Image 1 (tube, rainbow, N blue to C red):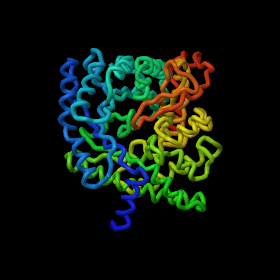
Image 2: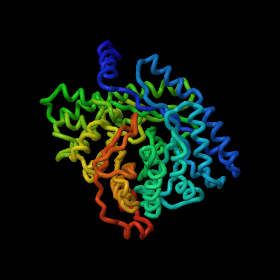
Image 3: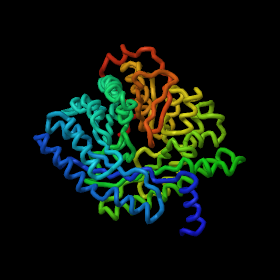
Length: 451
C-alpha cells in the first residue's frame, strides 16, 4: 500500500537524487516489411514505424506530466536490418536513411536495429550491412548500430571480430569532424539480448511480439544517497540497503511501462534494471562504489564492490517487476559517468581494470575513448577479449570504443548530452594481428552443452 512517506520519498529522489526513467523503448517487428524491391521495403519500414510509434513521444510526455516522473528518452528498436537486406539486396544504407526519416518524423531520440547477428556465420545480407555501417552512421543522426559476433552456445566468429575492428575505426574516421560520434553509436556484442531498451545496442529480437514496450530505469544517485546515510553499515547491510532501494526504483519503472503499454495498446515487455549513469554530478555508478568505501573507482576492491552492487540491484529489482530483461545490472560507460570520467583522468581507472569489472557488471567496455592511431587489429583484439568473457561466463558483454582520430593521450572528446565526454585512455599497442588474421572461430565452451 502506498503511503504519504513513500510519495514524499519518491519526490525527493526525483528532485534531489537524479531519479528518472532513462528510456521507454518501443520494439517493432519489420518482418512483414520485407520485399524483394529495396525501395518498396524502405517505404514499408517507414510507414510501419510511423504508424506504430506515432504517439510514443506524446504518450511519454503525458505520463511525465501526470506522475511527475522524468522520462529522459523515447526510443524505437527494430528487427535487425540485415535480415531485410538479405531479402531485398541493394544498398543497405537506404534502410538507414528510411530509419532516420522515421525517427525524425515521430520525434524519438534514437532508433536502433541497424544490426546483424553473425555469431555462427554470415547469411545473406549480413556482410553487406556490416560493410555499410560506417557510412550509415555518418549519414544519420539518430541511428544506432550493433553486431553480435559471439555467444555461449555458438562460440566467437573471429572473421566477424576482424571486420568489426575495421568498421569501428572507419566509423570514427568518417565522423572525425563530429568528435568521432559514429563509433559512439556502434556496439559489438557477445550474447546480445533481444529485449534491450538501451542504445546503442537495442534491436527487436525475432522471438519478440510484433510490437512491445520495454523500459530502462536509472537511479545511481538514489543508491549513492541511500548508502551515504549509513556510513557504519557492514557490507552485507549495504547490500540489503541496495536491494531495497533497487526495489523502489524498479517499481517506478514497472508503473511507467504498464501505463505506456495500456495507453499505446501494445504489450508490456520488460523492465531493464540497469543503473544507467549520466555525466551529471550525483548520478554516477563510480560514486556509488566510492560511497561504499573506495578512495577512487579503479583502485583495489573495485571489482568486488561492483559485483556486490550488481547482484543486489538484480535481487531487489526482480521482485518489483512482473518481467525483468534486457541487460539488468550496473552500467560502467566511461564518458557517461562523472565518477568514471574523473577516475580515467586521474589514471586510477584503466582499460585493463575496466575489463576485469565487465566480468561482474551489466555489460562491457562502454563509451571508452582510445587514441586515434589505435590499429584495427588492436580494436579487434579488445573485442575478442571482451567476447571471451561473455562467452565463458554466459553473460552479455559488449565493446563500444571510440578511436579519437587526430587525438592522443591527454586529449578529450566532447559528445554532449547523455553521451558526455571522455579522456583518451591508454591502450596496450602490442599487436594481435597474427591472431586476428587467422580467422575462423573460437569454439563454444564445454558448459554450453546443457541439454
